[in-house]
Length: 319
Image (cartoon, rainbow, N blue to C red; front, side):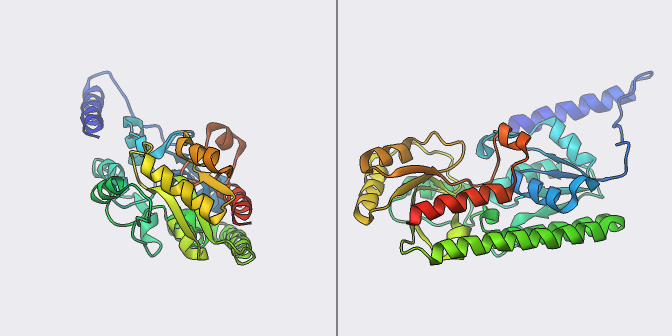
């Protein structure tokens, strides 16, 4: 991050120097239309925004498709985007310190920021039995006490989308009715997704998940009354395999006859794969929706699509 800030300062100094040179010009080109300009840091808010506003806004995402969010480093181009947008959508919290530093370097008095962590009640990060204790301690010191993957619950997703809609209506009142109409339809879709999860959980005798990976699903299991065992907390940056963690999860799968073990997107699946090899359990993906692959992004895959996949994999794991 220090290197990024140094590069940004150099960039801005050079930018100002070029503008001041006689006969030289380097200016931001305003969009040809008057659409609301919206920038999202991650996929969930990007998708919520496009479901609400469609092509009535100019929308972009800082996190490149296929990029692992925990290793993302912003660029000078990202700063330019924030300098000239109307609304910035981000996660917020300790894990988004790079965002706050980026915002601190931006001079845009009309910019309105929506932080997902401000839209819903927060849950503390949790260390369950079997997690690597040194990772748990490290992550609490680095990332704070709250789990920031607040969109993992469809109920939370609806609350976040409602806040985004309210900001769009405030910033662009001419299109407020359009945004509100779309939001009502989207809210109904999210509530159908909520009902799908509730039906799967209530119809299953099993209520425990095993994730051989990070666990960014605290809000989902809390919403639907599930318990879980996982290798690492949701914000862990170091996810090296541990013999003790693997042994614990292997024994848990065997003891409870758990039929499937989950990994998250962009994972190397090492821990989950070993557990499956040792137990005969099926390896399944549970997508955190933090980001999507380049192929999924190009295909227009949505939060609803990813969560419906999760629901069907959950059904298989709980039966």
